[in-house]
Structure formats: C-alpha cells, structure tokens
Image (cartoon, rainbow, N blue to C red; front, side, top):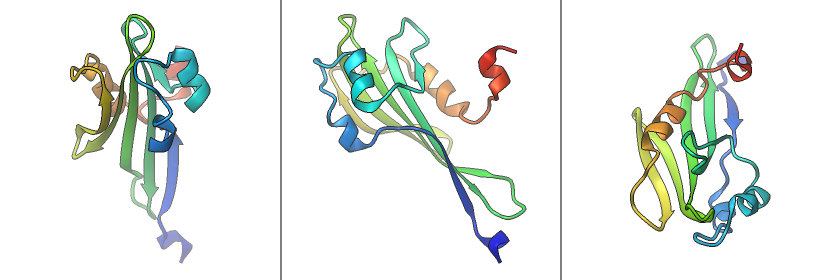
Length: 133
C-alpha cells in the first residue's frame, strides 16, 4: 500500500514572503541580504548583479518517473551602488516563467534570459557539472 502513496522531495531554498519583507529596497546590501535570509543558490552571471534563490518540489509516485510540480526563483537585484534595487519571485507555470510578486525600483528585468536558463536547468545538473569534471 505504501508504494501507492506519492513521495515528495524538496530541493533548494527560496526565502518566504515574511523573510523577504525584511529586505529594504534601496537600503540593504549584498552582505545584509545574506545575513538576513542566507546565502543565495546562485549569483548573477553578468557582473554579479543579483542573488538568485532557487527551489523545486518533485513528486514520485510508484513506477512513474518523478515529476517536478513546483519551481520557484527569488531574484534580488542590486544597483551599481551595491544596494537592493529589485526583489522578485518567479514561478514556472505551463513551462513559462511567471512573476508571482515584485518589489522594484524599476520595472525592467535585466537578467530575464539568465533567469529562464536557471529555472529551466533546475535538476538538470550533477555534482560533476558543478566541479567542472
């Protein structure tokens, strides 16, 4: 009977909305963000412009292949002065990245291509990829 029950696995970490409410746009820095909500899963690919917190939830059910049922990215962008400029939460709905919440100083998302790659590659890498082997 236990084989008929789904098994859920969570991978990665995205801060809660309550944790993100502690971050002050225009005031907090990389150091204060890391101290308040933890180190990011990834940093920006171009000039260290942002912190990215990534998580997913996977459901395994009997003999079926595991299925990703939820993916989420929290993107925290920084200005040239080093302070927080944007705090955004993205989900993946029907294969498309969807903004779930935003607290921004400008509405332009500079690293959308990077975010799409990051969301799309969740779970598609191994330790060998990370170590460069």
